[in-house]
Each structure stands twice: as structure tokens, then as C-alpha cells.
Image 1: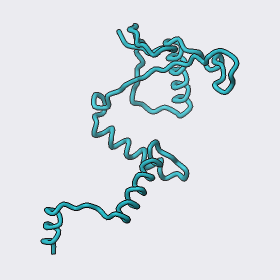
Image 2: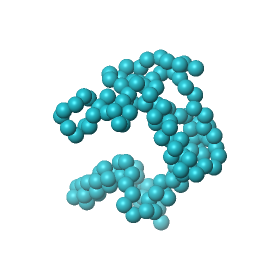
Image 3: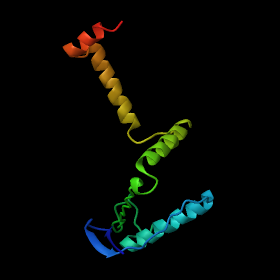
Image 4: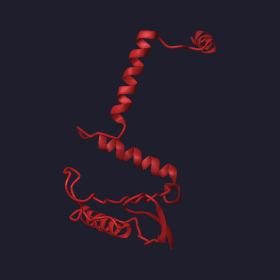
Length: 142
């Protein structure tokens, strides 16, 4: 099966024979999921020619070689699997469950909160612009 892999160094795609990884819907323990994830990470690191963690130099010191890490992107269309509506519903359940725990931070949440706060402050100081048609329709509500 042909595929595209982004390797270490300059991110230039190259066509290669991709390895197929089978995913099934089944129950597995967190330990087996972690082992599978770890094995997949090592496999991908080898496939793209990047350094393994124990081979890479530190990002935090000036001496040594460049870390030579690599990136691989796996793109999945949820519409082709469970369906987009099912996927979005499941993500909503996951996020709601995560937010029950104190201290959980989601990407973009802080920026969104700051943006909303700034917009509210601006609206309180300057007011908001409302179209004449909207104002007229509000006057008819009893």
C-alpha cells in the first residue's frame, strides 16, 4: 500500500510502502492500550528515520547533535468510520467528563475565556450595535 511519510530533517513528503495498522473496536485494558500505543510510537519513529528518545540529544543544552526528532501525521476521517455525528457526540461526552475533574485544561479554553471577557468589557463600556430591524422586531414582543 503506498503512502506518504514525513521524516526527520526538512519536512519533505516522500512516497513509501506504508505499513497497515489494524484497529478494532474491542475492550482492552489501559495497560494493553499503553503497550500498543508505545509500540506504535516506536514503530513510527523507526519508519520515519527519527531518533529514539534514548538516542536524541537534549533540547535544553547547547552541546551535542540536533535531537533529530521526526513527525508523523495520521489523518482519520471519522465520517468513514463511526460517522461524523457519532464522533462529535462521543467527543462531547469525553470533554464533559474531563471537565468534571478540577484543573483540567483544554486547548484554546484560556484564550476563549480571555476573548469573551474582553468582548464583555467592551460591550459594557461602548454598548452594542443593534440593527433597526432587530429593534423593531423586539418592540413587537409582548
